[in-house]
Image 1 (cartoon, rainbow, N blue to C red):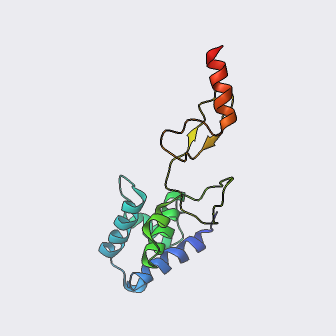
Image 2: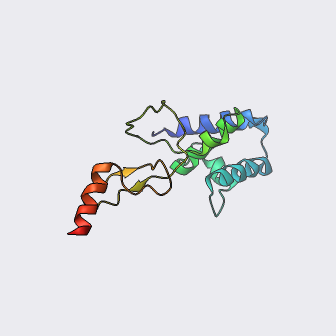
Length: 145
């Protein structure tokens, strides 16, 4: 999602206010504290500075995608959304089984071991190497030849 500088400033203002900080009297130390919290969430090193946030609040600079994601994540944490959901990444998944919209996937995907396949799948067990039985059969036949 792309946001105008005005929308970015409004989002940052709302987040700061939800931290019980008065936006009209915010100090550089308070703004740096917000920048530090956002940096930790985004795993940003070097950390963002209070000046960066001030420029966004004043509409002089666009927020990076990484900062926008961190703003939403911190907002969700403040709203007491479970941390695992907040730190996750939204992706499109093609499910053959029953997977609820917004479900949390706790495993990494991996590429099928059949060289001719190329499908990324989430294994049902750690030692699963193929996305399906057909790929396993094809690869075994190829290895015997």
